[in-house]
Image (cartoon, rainbow, N blue to C red):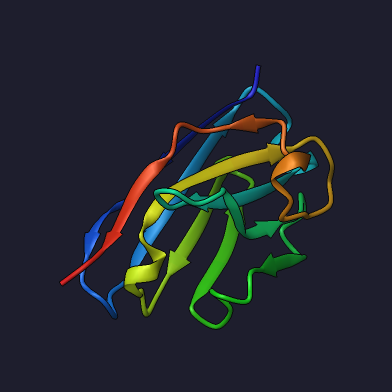
Length: 124
């Protein structure tokens, strides 16, 4: 059974940075795409970024382009989301998820297994 564990969330001031980690187990890591999603209070879960199994192809939501980067270390079964120039509107619970497909997608419905989430709060 795939398992995903997020870490790295916290409280940061506007303009600051955080790096989220997603540690995976229970499946052949480099076969599958990993996505990062977020859900703010009262809003639907949205796709932030994704990376394909090989780590070459990436995709970002328009709201985070130029500020967030995604990477994966297949030797460590871990995906990272580097978040820079954070804004208050980035405040949400951030989740990683695995898609049982090599290719990237930011659609919530296409992901099969989810982590428990990590809270990111951007506030002065």
